[in-house]
Structures are given as C-alpha cells and as structure tokens.
Length: 229
Image (cartoon, rainbow, N blue to C red):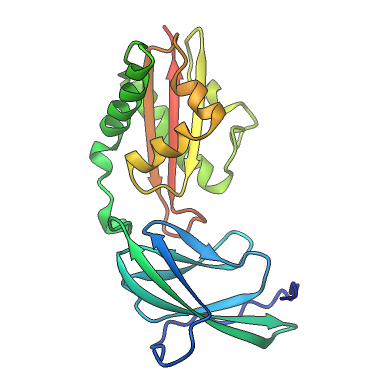
C-alpha cells in the first residue's frame, strides 16, 4: 500500500455496514485503544457507534477509538489526491471495561492512583507516599496544560516540576490516553523513567491530576507530582 500525502480530510461517516462484505482482517482489541493509519489519508465508517467512535488527532488525521465491549465492523477508505483508491473492511472483537466519558469517576482518581503507587512501592520495601492537597491542585493545572502541549515544559517555558514551590527533590510524570487509574499506573510502571519516579525512595508526597478533553488527541490526561519535604 502506498503512502498518501494529500491534505484533504474527507467527511467522517458512521453508517450501517453490510455483514456480507468480505472482511480484510479480524482483530481482538480492548476498550480504550485507538486504531488507525496515521501515515495515510483515510476515513472510517463504523457499524455500531456505541462500541467505537471516530476521532481526529492533532494533525487532522482520523483514528478509531473503542469505547465499549462488543463486536464492531470498521470500513476504511484510503484516498490519494482527494480521490478514494482502496477500501477494506475490518472486524473487531472488543473486550474490557467501558472507556467512554460516562465511565469516568474523577472524584476517586487521586486516591486510587495513590493506592496503586504505594502497592508498587511496597513490593520494593519503600515507604508509602501520602497525598498532598497542594500537589493535587498543581497536578490538575498541569493536566490541563498538557492537552495543548504534551511536554514537561510548561506554556511559560519552565520545567513542569517547578510548579511545585518547595521540596528538596521534585518530580513529574505525564501520561495520556489511559482512562482509569489502573491503566495509567500500568503505563507508567512500564516506562523506565516514570517507574524510577514512582520508586524513588526519597519521595514522601504525591499529587495526582486528571483532565478529560473530548476534543483532545488522547482525551484522558494525567499528571503525577512528587516531592520531598
């Protein structure tokens, strides 16, 4: 399949797909995952909008996000110079917990992340962290900031951890796309640098920020801030 470089983004569609059409590929996938062809100009048609949705990434491309368990057909139409050139039908078997915005329970997220982090620290005989109200507030600010610029550099040019006004050691973890505390902690623990922050022995306090942006590239945005006294 050739790469297409046309800047035209055709209209997004959600239609009924005829099951008798031949299926190009069949996949098992979990809710919360995104799927697509980021290097191509492509549109998607979805058989069941309750199971999957079409979203736009920041480059203007289209992706499919799976939000509820079930089976869903996705038809992908590829374009070159504004004209459709190839079309394929895919079948997805979606498993897992609902990941749509209605499944979000923000009020308990900080405490749940703290419990999961402390469980990881306990495995290495490290003292547990405690939540700090001021760090939670700073982390919420950072979570909103990274929607527009996913970076450890703040919009004002400062390092993200400098939002913490005091502390001998200060650190920051960022994540995007995970829709639950367990998913985001798993994501952090599978990244060497983020894992090192979680397991840094000298840290004493934790702040957790979360922000949901339905128009954002990843929709779910997370921040951990760490501090020693």
